[in-house]
Amino acid sequence: MKKTILLLSTIGLTAGLQAQTPVTVSISPTYTDQVWYSFQNGEVGRAPLHEWDLAFELTGLTAGVRVNTAKGSVVYETPFTFGTWDQLNAPDEAAWTRIDNDVARWDMGALNHGNNMDDPDGFNVGWGNYNSVTHQMIGNKVYAVLLPDDTWKKLRINSVISGVFSFTYANLDGTDSHDASINKANYTGKNFAYWSFGTNAAMDREPASATWDLLFTKYTDFVPTPYNVTGVLQNRNVTALEVDGVPTDQADWWGGDFSSDINIIGSDWKRYSGSYVIAPDTTYFVKDRAGSVWKMVFTGFGGSATGDMNFNQELMSPAAVSEVAVHQAALHAWPNPVEGSQAQVQLELPQVRGTLRVFNAAGRQVAVHQWNQATGVLALDVKDLAAGVYTLRFEADKAVATGKLVVQ
Image (cartoon, rainbow, N blue to C red):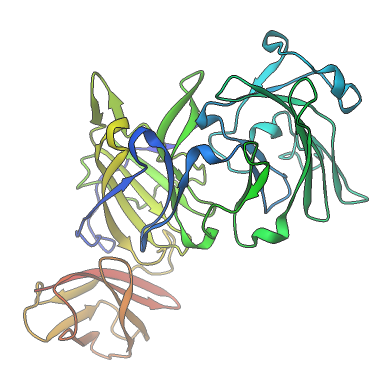
């Protein structure tokens, strides 16, 4: 379930940049692409949605296996076993269980259905079991996959041994059988390795996990039955907060419960009533992998005609400022805006030593100064800064403060 919180606007130390950058991410007409996006660097990867069928998790202990249901495939768990593999030779959807990828977790793919890995003593990963003595995962379930062209495949995950996924798939009548493998070591730094039934080959199609924050894509959600939607999913180690019922220019993130559920942004920032409209008074705050906090407000959606998703992004904090910081100080600059070559920056804690960092609207550090001012005031040289809005951030062992500076 998505977590939504209602917050009132607050004024103080964490006032954001107030500089919104308009962004358009397009996943192409009819939503044919997946786009990996970084708040700091924009689009960092793009690949066709329909080119893959299976995704194999590369990190963690759950051995997640996802199925590309967004392209139109449907996957079923059957009562057949490895010993009765050959007896699975005809469709029987009424006797099978449809399964889908978990919409809130990357590590729980469709083939992890029925797992107990959240139990401290759990060893069932869904498609098989983990052996704590051999440290091997051995499969025991057989699946049937209905492809978009109305053809069927039967599939089993045989094992994960020494970091290698082994799996077998074939037509239901046993023809076109393939014994395949994915070696996780070949995809260091990625979240998933992919496989295509069409090419019978592995695919390295996503950027390194450390380089992106959000995935813009079509995916299967539950409304309440499985239904393909278009929206935004968060990367691992990226958390988000949805604020509803507050005007977007007043929404704040302090005290909010940031969630690791990957669908906090999801697809419900838009509504359809003959045409798409953006949900009013809905704001998202996202903590990226580095800890910076970004404000995200959607402004438009082009639908299947363009695949465009429009939003404003705004850097609120260049690094995660803890809601329980030892001391939250005030940081002010004047004149503000500044038109000359120098601005005065004042910290309410004059005896504190620390570091003052200056970040531009893209979240990149453009200046750094050591703070050791007995008066609590620092003369900041801005002659080399381009016109724009900047975040000032003071950091010390027992204090933190942020403010804004506008350079004209």
